[in-house]
Image (cartoon, rainbow, N blue to C red; front, side, top):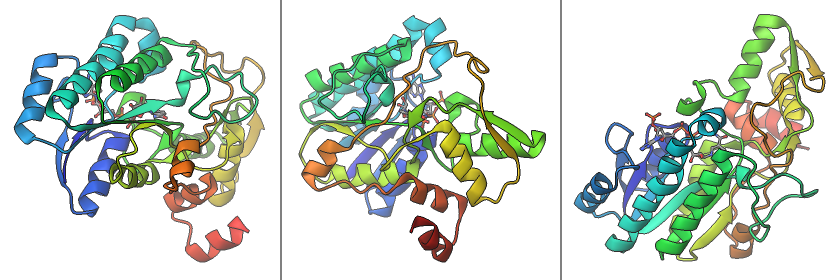
Length: 294
Ligand SMILES: NC(=O)c1ccc[n+]([C@@H]2O[C@H](COP(=O)([O-])OP(=O)(O)OC[C@H]3O[C@@H](n4cnc5c(N)ncnc54)[C@H](OP(=O)(O)O)[C@@H]3O)[C@@H](O)[C@H]2O)c1
């Protein structure tokens, strides 16, 4: 199959390129320098040249604070840029696989969100990504929209300055010896290579639609940090951050936990418990991993 990956040098995009190549697919990786999705004409031209079977889009403006201060640009990329891809996919008769976010929800639900739950974004970022989802779903007949949460990978997240949460925690622990982390925001840490493998698996079917796509289980950021320190035997003091110790400039959902209901109904959910993905990321040997998971 011929696959175009937009945002191919990003944290997630790099793993998606690798995952499709590992399956023998021919991949055209497109970086921001190759393609600006907010410009309609080059999008169509570039994509038509390659005649892909699937267009995968990871490109987004997803620094939440930047989106809040530049709403025009956030919508130009996350909504209208995605619309350009959806129009191109429709005209070429191609599948569009698009990555969206847990931030389409307001976080007020007490349990995990599934695909039937009503979005209610709290921020410009969340609103612009939701608008992008709607463009995909209403324009591109053959589409997959995958909402994910708290992703991390071996490749740096370009929009967030390069360090993922795990690297940041370990850096702070080494520098300060004491680390404070919030315990009132719940997520599901999801490795980008697991998500990429899930996307490849889904790409082989034609059950188009909206899917939640995260690791299994959930934790607060504090619990995530505690697991990182335990697995790496890091001796830093870890404390729950005091209320307002890290005042949020932009509101974020307190509960970002997603349930992969659609993938499970299809029998295609390939995700593992989040702790297992973390062990692999940290290079924990299989024997120790098995013992820890029991
Ligand atoms: N990070 C998270 O925790 C998280 C959680 C939920 C959902 N998501 C979603 O996951 C996706 C991938 O995130 P990531 O962490 O892999 O991000 P990333 O490392 O910042 O990668 C994004 C890629 O998109 C490119 N890009 C940005 N704006 C573009 C534009 N206007 N036209 C073309 N390319 C553009 C970037 O290039 P430049 O850097 O050169 O601009 C980069 O290659 C995003 O859609 C995001 O909304 C992320």
